[in-house]
Image (cartoon, rainbow, N blue to C red; front, side, top):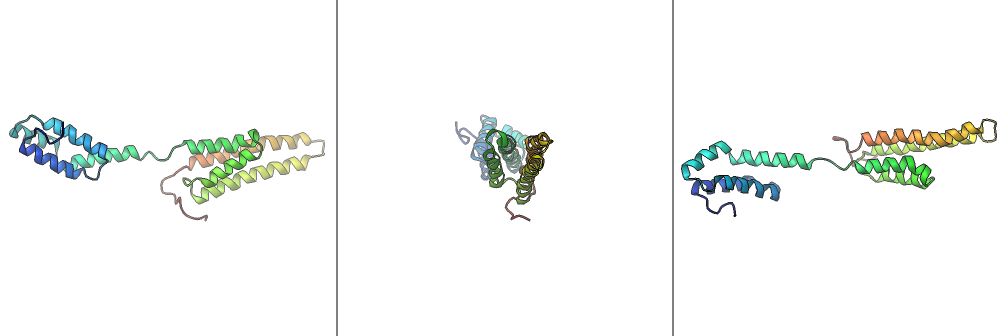
Length: 185
């Protein structure tokens, strides 16, 4: 049944005010609120309708409450899946698909608009620094009796360092108030 069917004059007027107050809301919410209130008022005589309308409150208040509840549900922010996948590509990519997997993680960092330019730059530079230091460690101990130390540095440092870089990026994912479209500072 439509909201304005089988309504007395007072209820019809109230529902029209409510419909006007809800005009900027989401269509689904607008229809749901309007139908719920119409069902509440349907079948009441004029005096009962006036009493029930006083209990319900002003149409503007009902509309504001409905839109506020809708806004809080919609503002959940971007998905946390992207920084998690980026972290996995950054950390495990170095080992699973040598070099290319890690480069894919770096590209994912640079491509996202949910990190500020500064955070993207710091994440990329931090990861590159870890790889450079581990490579220097490998070459520094190459051909010596301590070659195993160089191999351990080269094997473990990218894993440990990129875990810290991934954590840094994950904690700064879509932070409110950060300038997401600015150029690097």
